Length: 264
Image (cartoon, rainbow, N blue to C red):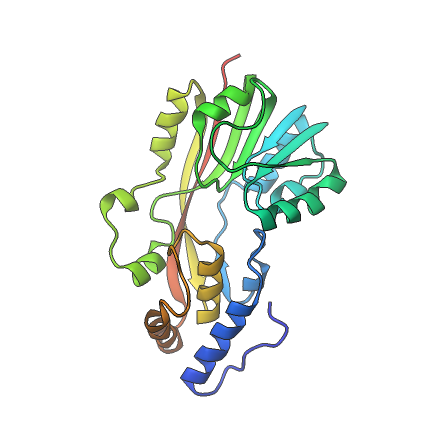
């Protein structure tokens, strides 16, 4: 939430400029979306990833969190395994994750999110990842110990594409269909893993003002690649007027939960 709320009244163009300037001025480091409180909502998946991941962490001896972001989710675990490692590629997030996780006994490793993972074979009995950009299944299978588990919540196909297509226009079928859960199942099996759980959900997401949209697109940079306010000012102004006239902009987030095990 911002320190100085934008007034609810006033000329539309002035309000647009104020909302956009505010959203451009805040940091988008880390993976904390609390700035959007009261400005956007996202329905949560029914499975409760953080809680379910914490349950698995409590039973693990050696765990790896891939693409930890700022370490926000991993830091929420009440009981970390004796050996807990997290990887991250983006320098601001590496610093944030290190500051957050080192006091909890977890090690943060800088990694460029490309194979190979910087660990030996069969190093972990649990590997987790929330919203990985890419899942390198063969590497996950390699670093899992026999009988080990990979547990992940992932972004599904055409997630928030109502917003994406507002800015980029209709996307081709191969783009809309990417990141499908069944494709993940196929890739996991091909890497030698057994998929024991796969659950997709489509969830309601609303943006209440244009500042929320700008902040979201600055933070989730792959939604509208190379997004800047100046490059998309006409579309932003049109969307601002639409929200003011019609109410919150409705989109749908897609997620899937996948759990896979390496044969013992």
